[in-house]
Length: 421
Image 1: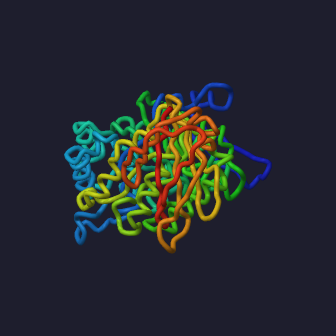
Image 2: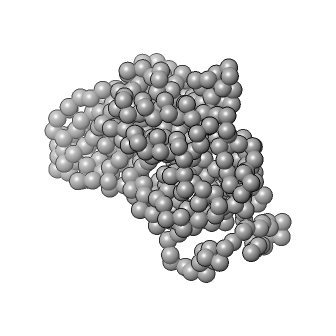
Image 3: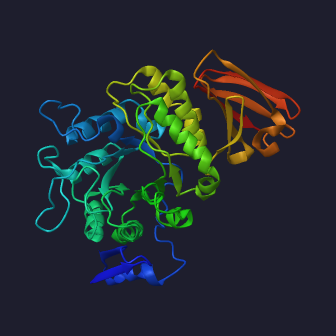
């Protein structure tokens, strides 16, 4: 049946095709809609968008267009070059995979020229490599690139993805008629995915599109989504990374506490291995994405990545911080003299600490911090073993609570430490 959802503003009207089972969503409180047991640690993998965008020209750029060939090549490299074994196990398709129209039964379909074997075949291939497949759709009438949206077809799209063997859905928020349809569409798709019976990680962009209209209800968002975007798309530039980090610091009191196993803030893709960041800036992104307990979704060309960038992305000590099972997001707790200090509580009473140099001029900046101030005064009480992990690993040894930690941080760089009791 058709159901109209009205707000106090009569302009905010939308129609959703609701099956009777979905009315549980409106009538039963206290039942978790997305009780899928997934993403207990932040999702890791590869996502095509930042590096390959919406390149449809397979004739002129066969190695860079959005096609099954691209994803099969990346799947092979994720296994052969150690990415899967490092934890990067989701291979994710973003926008521009679809045909311009749905099929005769109303189902989404892949572009037949660029994905001649179809998504189910690609999913089977990805699974044969020990990987998982992610796919993209949109809550509105069209995707951001203008392909068919899921509005009015949430159930059939969720079932289509499940039938294909999809393991993750990135659900964008373009071309939605109203705030009401945006919010209810995200909630409804969570239910639709659950009803398929397949385990599908649900990646939302709900707060990103909602914030221009009103403050997001993160309790609601956490209730339905495994991770969610809050801020603008990342670009292959230092300015973009700085803007994401600045936004996170401003809003951290609002977002940090809602993160945890199964529910993560997503500051967007890792652009390490591309063109726009210096080495120190790449270190900063890797270190702070670990501190923020962020999904680690690379967007780069694994066929052309340098050994240095690969080593950074596969750094097992940094990944261990990102994937720490305690599941607490870190935060910035001090900003002084062009230095930010971030920290994150870890399991077994350990802490991660990152010291970031905000200056982009001059040489390495010396910085000294009281050991007693770290980890809310608990990290090294009465003492701890400190290891520098980035930009290079150095065992610094045992520190008593009364001592100071001295370091030097390159311009736009970050030094990452692990503190263990």
